[in-house]
Length: 342
Image 1 (cartoon, one colour):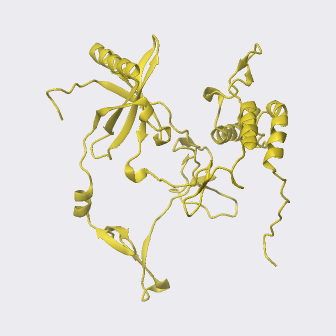
Image 2 (image 1 turned 30 degrees about the vertical axis):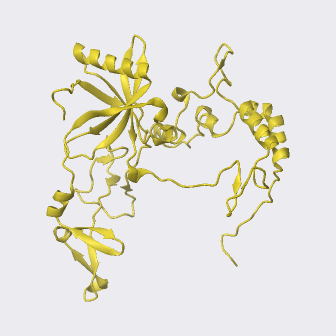
């Protein structure tokens, strides 16, 4: 864009955080003595089990399931009121209100934004101007190209400049030719003597924002414009104080204990595991090794984050009771629902 003043740094970019997905299972058919004898083509000795990994199946009792997709249109003159059509006769269309706007291949080529693989810094902003809720999606880390002293020096200079000026960089990124462009925020990241890098998170475009207006909590504004600092549905100073005491008492930042009994963080991210991901992996391993046994319950390390620590709940009981008293909370009556209305 500005060849006379721009600099180019050779970098590599990796995922820093990426959502771990629960493994998926494919459908398959188990032959029974009463089932129809499969053809040689159906009696395959391989089947996709989890995440597309091919597993060898010694027995012919299991066959993969094949899916067929058919496209039909309403036709009163065809059998069943439906007529099957060929895929080649389909065209893409978009809804505009209640109308369908068709787009052929030529139109799609014009509509598609022509982009090229790139990673360009657009400018810089002070750190206090970035709203944390604007961070979207997964984060990545950008490091200098290995065995490239000039790139490592350039990245180091950029990282330390951002730290000293308390600034973030805003960059435009296109992952591959023809891909949609994105805007990311680059923050400096330093591990002394180990790593100097930039961590980026995606930023939203204007179309991604969802802004809702809510009435303030500290005052009531009437239709005539009058403001009331004290009102029936506003929190009193006693309620604010009781809630503040309860929040302070429920602090878990140093509630954990290490092997020596020293206070530590209760749930560091490195030791907080996804119950759904580990549960399914644990179940798959158990069923593969012991197919005739019942699945055991999840280990405690996976369930400890499902509720507050019992010891902490006991220690904060006084603050909780005071909060209940001040807020005048009453236990509701249980409600019963019938599956079917008689």
